[in-house]
Each structure stands twice: as structure tokens, then as C-alpha cells.
Amino acid sequence: MAYDITYQHEKRYLAYKKAFEKIDMPPPRLLIELARCSICPGHPPISYDHAIILVMKALNNALCTDGISVLCNLYSLKEDKKKVDYFSKILENLNQEFESPSIEPPFLVEDYLHRKSVHYS
Image 1 (cartoon, rainbow, N blue to C red):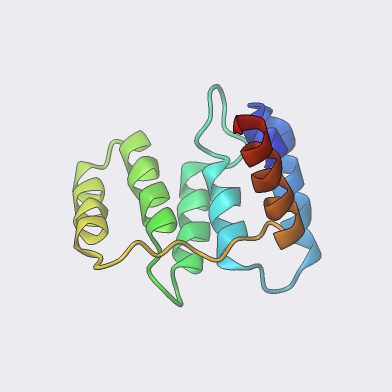
Image 2: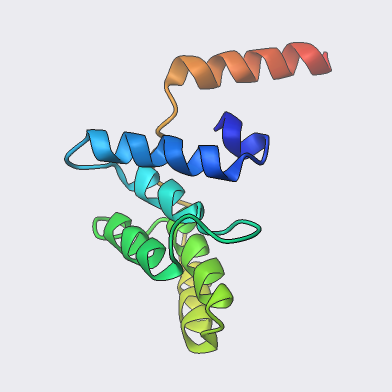
């Protein structure tokens, strides 16, 4: 998450890849975040096609808005207007905003939110 915030794309990819390699059944959010690493400036560390496979695997159990949004971006980068339109319609027709479950430890998120609220108080 820190690498994403600081635009350290290669380090972000390596961190997600390392986590991915350590577990047998990666959670959907990890698959989506690893795929999202292909959307970066310069030469992506992961191909768009491989990223699409990862997102589709994440969407096997449930359609989540973050995964479908990444698919829209990937197909846009591949200049596949039909697929962009298809997944954009799915995204529009979802009745609720459902994101894949977070992979950040709760204590980290709570600490970040606490610091942010103190900073803005």
C-alpha cells in the first residue's frame, strides 16, 4: 500500500508478487492488486493479458466493483472497445458497491485512519 501511495510501481509489484507466491489460494483483492500493477507508466511488470486472467480468477466467486473497474482499465489499454463497453455496463448495473475484502491488516487501517483524523482535527 505504501508503494502505491508513493508511486514506486516496481516495488509495489514485487511486494504483491512475493505475497502471491507465499500462499496457495490468494484472496481476490490480492489478485486484483497484482493485476493493477500492470496499469503504470512505462513498461508494466505484468502483461495486460496476465492481469486480466488474475482479475477473472478474483471474480469467480463474486462480482466486485474494484475488479470490474480494473478490467475496464485493462481493456481500455488494450484498445478493446467491445470489452470495455461490456464490463462498463456490468459495473453500471451492479445494484450495490461491493469491493473485494481488504487485504490490509485491520490494525494498520485503524492506525492510518486515526492518524488522519488527528491530523485534520
